[in-house]
Amino acid sequence: MSFNGAYLAVGNLRFSVYPTLSDVYFDTTFEGTTDSSGILVINNIPAGVINYTIKKSGYYDRQGSVSVTEGITTLVSVILNLVLGSLFITSNPPGAQIYVDNIDTGYTTPSTVPNIAQGNHTYKLTLLGYSDKIGDFVATNGTITVVSLITWMPANITATNMVITQSETPCLAGTCTIHADVTWTNGGETDGIFTPNITVDTIPVSPAPYTSRNLAAETTVTLGFDVVEPAGTYSICPSPNQ
Image (cartoon, rainbow, N blue to C red; front, side, top):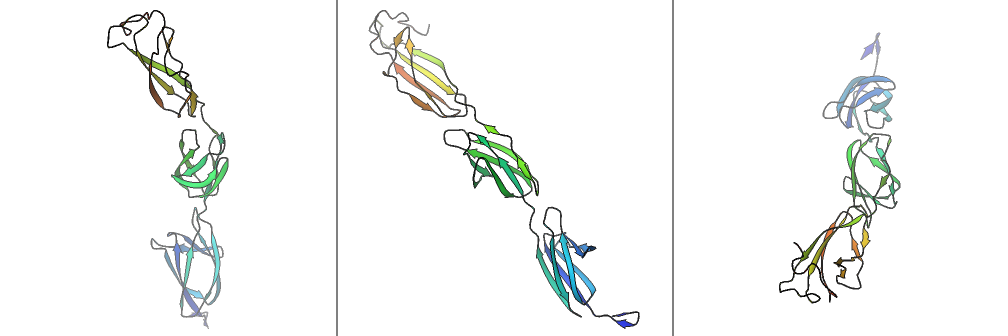
């Protein structure tokens, strides 16, 4: 190749870049964009050292240099690294295991979880004695996404729906046996402890002494009890549900 009558030695560069559709610059001059296969061929480059920069939104720039050889097409292979985001998440109480997209991150609250790709994700917090906390977040490249403080509601145990079953045999005052079914519901998000303490017309119901029981977060349990040796006159006998 000649320029103003002088011979100019030139060569070619073939860029192979991941991801595809990346922009190629020589110093600060835009030279083109790689195609859907990640390829860009630039011909007739003066022989010598060329400084290049590869750019794509959401990825770190990659700079480098390459020697252009006369009459030769030189291959330049480049892989760009994602500009990853991070997630900061904390909880009350702390110490919950953090999952992102159902994968254990190895971090516990409070923590910043690094290297999360840009886009939509889910998080989950698990902690023994507490219900799981699940939510969505959007990761943005190069930034820290902050999730608002997550607090578990304490145990809130209520007893409802006590059902009394009458005796199958004729009931005589002071001698009949009845059965009581009581439902307990934990409306909180933490495990709780409750102690059954049931009386029917002032008559205590077994077991006695009452045993404390654990009720997991957001669960319901129904327990059955029998009247033990009722004393005095049993006023709801013989038809307690009427």
